[in-house]
Image (tube, rainbow, N blue to C red):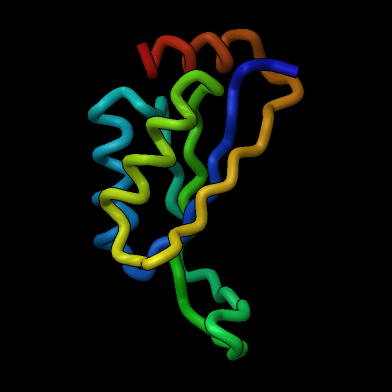
Length: 105
């Protein structure tokens, strides 16, 4: 297991996804953010099953930066309860993992 994390977050519009992604990279909270366009999410919210078109952000960061990433997503996001889930990176290319580390310094 490494100290690197992939954080999942969805956004309700392309503009919002780009705003969050750009801010995280500019502030060195993430080395990279991929935006996957127009996924469909089906979920339960306030007792009802809902469906929404969303944009998925794949945020590359470190365990040390995760709490700040989480707080910044909450601050920048329009949702009352934005998705923010960190997945540990088991292994990877040493060069790429070092690049993530350098990107968040």
